Image (cartoon, rainbow, N blue to C red; front, side, top):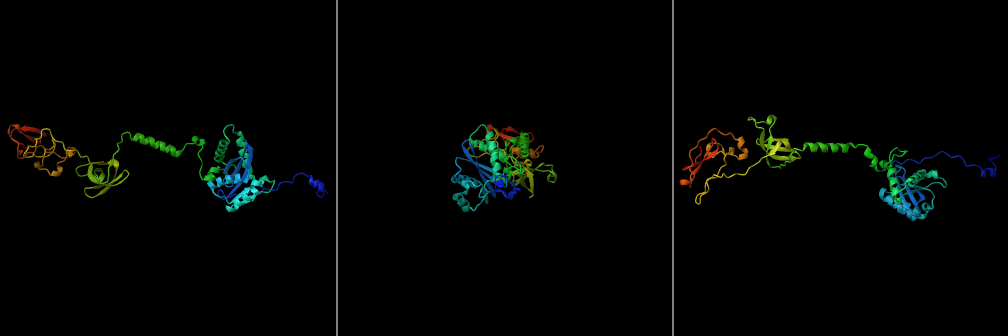
Length: 357
């Protein structure tokens, strides 16, 4: 009888709620976005744009909720993230206008509206509106745009209750850096710092050396490369270079690879003129002046063994070498001439001849 009474039906309590019909979760970010306005707060309205996949949120302060102002902010959002496939809104006048419908049609966007007087149908946007209002009111300092930026930074970097992952990680594919990251040690940064400390300690006594392809070098002779005479360095030519790895061609044609620490360049000292050398005369030039420790060609040694002072330590010296006297042309009389003694490597003043003994 009560169900058939029109008066009882008109004044009865609300009907029980129906089961929830959740939206299908998109498989990709920015497939479906939900829109709604929040406010007014501090004389401003705020357009809320939420991604259904990652729960990423964009907030745009605005003075008006007109269609033109709403489309202006949507263009800014779509310029950054692209066009969504569908948009979900309530039945506000700015979303029901012909201008908004034309915008969605031109950009191939499906516009879905929720039933009237049913905020839960657009529950994602409504929940984000409540979250933003609560955070905005709790902030005591800063301008409107500063408060919005603070809220977005915290919201986007905080794990979401439904996805258990932060919106930034789902939307951008990475975690954003926050002040809390300073409490967690970064393994890569720690490794870089330790390597820098080890390099600084190791390079205290190191010397920077540079060799080029084609230079004459000496390579360390280790293992089978060691010569029969016990030489520790073998001459060669640098034929390849890759960082600190060098390729050296030896005199016998072999090519070996060595670290830069095992290769040294050849040092050549310039010739030095002895102070007691005979000066050249006006008519006849004097013979070339040899160094104090040089071996004369007439001593019986091959010319290849006569080297500069830098290589003199590698040339075996005989106990005594005697050669026939050689008289310097154009030099005679009381001035005297100079003779060279290989035994003690000294220059002797002689009155009548220049000889090697």
